[in-house]
Image (cartoon, rainbow, N blue to C red; front, side, top):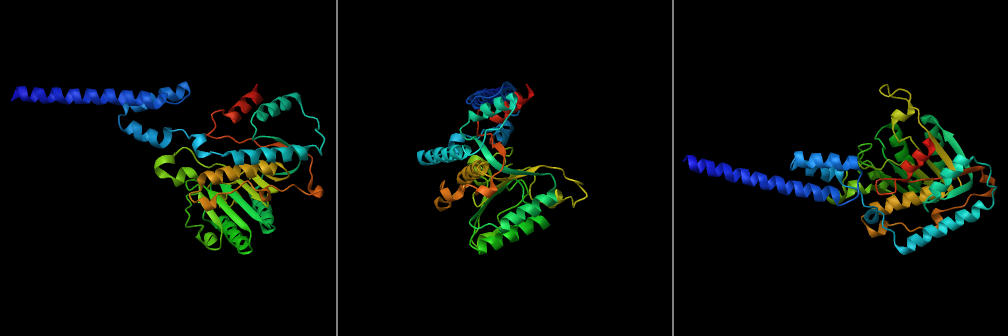
Length: 335
């Protein structure tokens, strides 16, 4: 029986060796099929080779890149509309003096101009807010005045006091006939579509971000919707660091005073934020009827009385962008 035992051990070792060879080949194919940094290649090779099976499971949820061409696919019509919006911005810019900017800022502006989605905009009215109480007070005021559309995307919308105040306000505006659309990340505030059911019931549209919607093909545990954008009537926009939650109002002992920065913008810089929202929304829809066209009603020029003096460039980046334009911008600022 000893010889039979030895044969079984040899067979087991051969099977194990074959498994390790297949695992290593699979690891090489998985890691090198797309361009990656040396650090990323080394880390994932170690994980995939020394954690057979488990490594591939980890990779499936946190290692896969987001393919920008698949997620943010734009047909020729929408590419044309984006170009037309850029022309509107450029024409509007002619109404304002270029102003004086330093050479270093000029170089940074030119670098970001490389991306056609980051046009310089002039004549914006910008207000910087660093207090959560003030941010929500003024944001809610703008929402109450909305006449046509409210487009909103947040990483975290919590089911708490301020979160429910926002929800009730959106419900009120939807009842008034305003088109309300909300894009959220379920992982951010641990919010589900159930929280938004009262808004949906009165005609509001609510979507989870794409990486949460398609669990099998697009789930990435380390890729989330970290943007905080509100665009009202295609003209007034908000963006910055504050999510929607009581902790940002300095009313929770756990976090103490929450210092962050948000901006209220009136002007064509809002066009860039609106375009970002439309792309994120259209990437997340599952029903064709929810798809949004790049309609002129979403891009309203400000009245002359609303003109400001600020030049502004909105730069969007994310894991779908191989150029890593924001990273390059930070490096240029350091140098």
